[in-house]
Length: 153
Image (tube, rainbow, N blue to C red; front, side):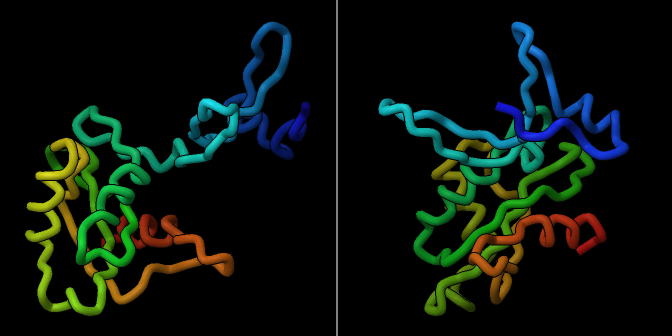
């Protein structure tokens, strides 16, 4: 099945988004997912969200899922931050549960993360916020946080 023929007046973007295999043309959506044993597909992340920290590939959704296990974390969004040594590093933007506010520090989150995830996935930076930006459907708008970080916070 065909999705669309290409990007209007952007041949380079079209060439990058499509590939051919066995004479058929396919579109690279940038979605990452998995298929379960019953053949159902689950979209888990976007390729563009990948953080390359010292050559290690960090998928934000994996780190977010782990952070949700922390008893003080109500919501979390993982973005990339510039790092002199690593190129990019993992930054956690976190909304704390009401009872944890003023009781939980960035170092607490980092120490907990070191015990519960691979070293390269551990957030090196933590920012606490009152709320995460969300779309009308309630989806976290991570791009807004990423753009703010790229502008210098």
